[in-house]
Length: 270
Image 1: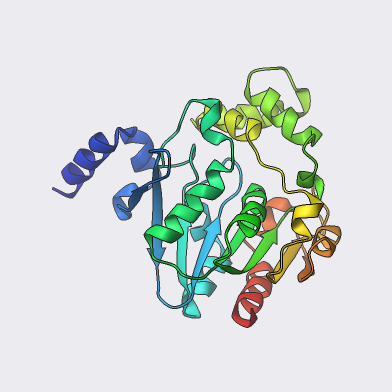
Image 2: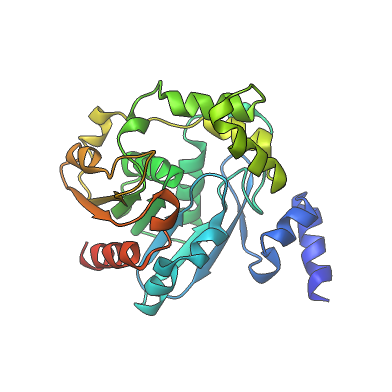
């Protein structure tokens, strides 16, 4: 009976059934309709101070549930909110490039905060999720503090070469350095076209914009992250920026107990 009701909901939302069940939507039937009609899947667990976790590239909101941070936040009384960003997981996958422009992803998060009636909230982003977090700091004055993880200053450059390379590789152009990434996307059955549009429309937050961010922001990275610096220069761009470094590479840091401890302490005190 439960699966039958789930199927009816998915058909009503016009969502891919197999894809949605893969993201364990049966365990969390929470959706909202964002500003442009895109259906966004989210989950809420716990109570207390709300914190929204924003995932990185080629994963979805479920990835947070495999981290030490997720469990630690719940243990310490936070209301933990995750979502599948558009084009990922059980959320809608717009196939139009314009659906990822003009801060669409940040607007999705802001719409979720409004749907939940949040007057104030904290945000933790990691990797590409940090790029969206930076936009939220510029756009939403309801944010009391934020964590930017696994990201240095490169995204502040509108002509960031890596973003362009990711877009070209996912759009089908030969980029030898990213061939393995594209192969992994295809092997996992992810929406390669949507992922390409995400890179095409990925926002930039300039140093001038970051200089106006007044909220406390922890910028934290791994000492073995070969693609991003640990964030000291990025933290310095913000008046209340703070900087931390933990042991690990880009993929391991977000799951680590050390990252969880830094972030928990910051959120509790800011």
